[in-house]
Amino acid sequence: MSIAGGPPTGATGPTVPAERIVARLRRHARALFLPSLLLIVACGVAGYAVPRLPESWMQLTAWIVLGAIVLFGWLLPVLWWLGQRTTVTTRRIIVRSGFFVRVRQEVLYSRIYDVSVRTSWLQSAFRSGDVLINTGADRPVVLRDVPGAALVQRALHDLTDAAHGSGTRMRWQDEPSALPDQSVVWGGR
Image (cartoon, rainbow, N blue to C red; front, side):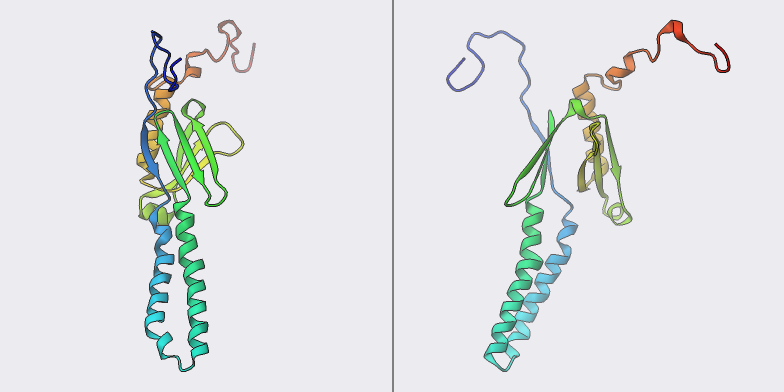
């Protein structure tokens, strides 16, 4: 083995293609509309109404209230939005979330059974949706409010089919459903 951790020198085994990033996804930016509107209103109030207050303690109180509104109404939602990211590679899906406490979840394509899309009326207006990835576990992995959800679903179908090595047929479709000599006729044996 080489010192850099690469393949051993003189190895003639089959080479595995490198993992490439197919897409990086975040929730739809529509989630930032209300926080941005709140920031614009807070800036307008700070520029117009606060200097017109007669007492200095009123101005100080208004600045503290506006600072809290900007912190909790704009900055924290933006940081929360930036803290959630999904990376789709040629081998797996990596879902990262959290800002102070990071949570990382990986799903290999060989574990995926089904990819479906769920949309609300608002999501369908913006062509986004929730992509549900069924791995056979209790709950599916959900990519929430992904822009271009139908395109993401098609790409995940293609990548899953390539990982299963079937193109259009799954491994379990090649196996017979019952033994040939144990067929049963309805209503009799």
